[in-house]
Length: 400
Image 1: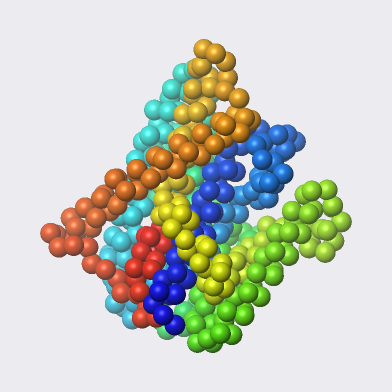
Image 2: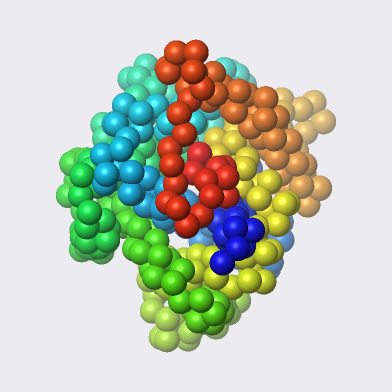
């Protein structure tokens, strides 16, 4: 298989990641419209078209974790098994990517919440904005550990869990060859916690880790399947095409249900979220990797662009929502009509514009500078990727 096709394949995951980030942006527009009141959710812009997003867009976070699991088993699995990367180097590579924007958005939210409080007498949805939660946020312990709810830049809850799973992944795989068994065991462990009930107040066993842990290790299992398909030639393309079927059936059935056909639940079951994660997500990733037309579309420049700035959009959009809310409550001409489609597109445009600037002129330079400082004046060391795919193919994805 040509290097160009391999690059296109992994680039398609960037496209998927970009789409998932846009889904989160659309979902969280509800902060400005129906205020998460499900009885009036149908008033949101493009309700008929985005019905699955407004109802299940929160599963985009689970999809992020599936993608992360796949990429980490692909990019780091072998080198960690070979003990070719130290824990400190692994930590530097991950934290220098995540920390600069995390801290920046954290301290951006503080004055915005203060301004909103001064005008309205209440904060923007989440009130846990004290020194205790600030300290937890600074240490990536703001969710799943000692927290008492969402705080500051609320979407960063998933980043805290992701960082924790990074290091769990490192510890489990270090010096061990049976990564597939590790992925299977941890997948079943977290899935059982998610289904049968988590253990409260115990990190890695509570409801927060149960929600996303099995998704991360599901990504590891998909990676194992991916390595097998790589050796199957044209048969892999057939499987990639067939993988579209469960995606269409699951998402189509659930959309049909919400458009007024409740009887469909008798066929699909009422636990739609688990059905989407286990039934649609693996098929979507396999189709993106092995079905040529889908891979080419998702690996196109516009979608890869959104993949590049996906972390930026995810971390920045809550501040933009707060800013829009502040202008609405302080406007002399009355509150902003957030149900207008023009306002909806303005919000998306502002987030994408700021995220583009942030990614190119803040995050990448900050990451490079921090890595150079850590390693002295030398350039940050590059972790070798598995031999079948060039590292450039997923540079952005791996740095998510």
